[in-house]
Amino acid sequence: MSLRGTFGQWFADLAREVSQADPAAVGGGIAACTAAAAFAGWYVWRSLNKARTIEDIPTSKARSAHQGYVELEGVGRLMDGAPIVGPLSGLPCVWYRYRVEERVTVHYKGGTQHRWRTVDSGESKETFWLEDDTGRVVVDPEGADITPKHKDLWHGGMLGLSSPLHSDFIASYIARNPTGNPHRFTEWRINPGDPIYVLGLLKNLGSHIDATTVDEDARELLREWKQDQARLRERFDLDQDGKIDEKEWMLARAQARREALNARREQQHQFTDGLNLLGPTNDSSRPFILSAFPQVSIVRRYRWQAAFYGAGFFLLGIAAVWLFNTRFN
Image: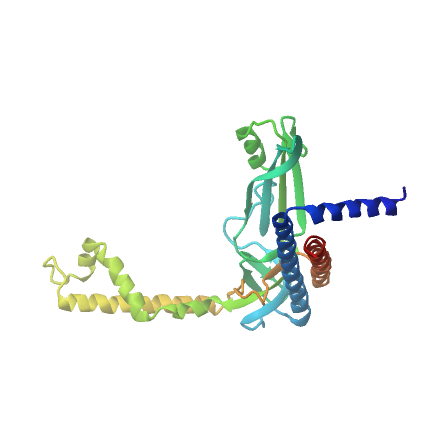
C-alpha cells in the first residue's frame, strides 16, 4: 500500500473513532485546541509587535538619549563592586541564567519514559553598564526578554562530569544529590565586552528624589534620632537638665531640616553625572528586550517565531473545526 493510501486509511479510522467517541471527551479536545490556538495567535501578535517595534524605533546614543522608551546599542560592562559570576562556569559575566535538570524515569501506560526534570534554576538580577562611544547607562535586566550569546552545557552523574570547566557549584551539587541519576547543567551568559542591544524605558534616577519632600525627610530623621535618646540629649540638651525642652526641640527640627537639605543636594550632585537607568516598561505593548545579537538577528528571530506559531494557530483551528464537524454534524 502506498504512503498516501496508508495515511488515508489512518485518517478514515481516526474519523470513525471520533464520530463514535464520548461527546464530552471530544468537547474537551475542541476546547483544548481552541485554547491552544488562542495562545498561538497571541504569541504571533506578540512576536510581530516586538519585530515592528525594533524596526520603527531609531537607535539613540547613551549621552543624548531622551527620557522614555528608547533603543540603545553598546557593549556590556561590569559595575564597580562584587563581580557577577556564572554559578556553573565560575566565569565573570554581566548576566546569566542557569538550569539544573535530573533525568528521571516515568511509568506511563504500562511502559517507561525518560525525561529531564528541572530541579534548580536561577537568573541574575544585578545591574550592569551599557557603554557606547558617547557614555553609558545602567541596565536593570529583570523582566526583560533576553537573548544571550554564550551557552555551556555539562552532563554529570556517577561517572563524573563531561567537562572539567565548571565551578564548585556543580561538584558540590552532585555530592549533595547522590541519586545516581544523570544530571544536566546548562548556563547562558552575556559576557563583559559583548555587544548588546536594549529596548526599554530610560529614566534618570534623580527623578526619584522628589518622591518625598524635605519636611518628610526631616521628620524621618527626627524619628531615627528619637531611637537613641542618649545621643539626642548629647546633641541638643543645651542646659544639661536631662530632657529636651521646646526650644531645644526646635533646634533639633532645624538641624534635621538642614541635614535633609544637604542629603538632597548631594543626591542631585550625583545625578548631574547622567546616571540613567534602562529597565522594564510595565506596558505589554512596549516590550523590554535585551539581546547580545544585532537588531537584524533579533527581528529575524521574532518573525520566525511568528511564522511558527502562526502555523500552529492555523493547524489547531483546523483541528478544532474538524473535531466539531466529525462528531456533532
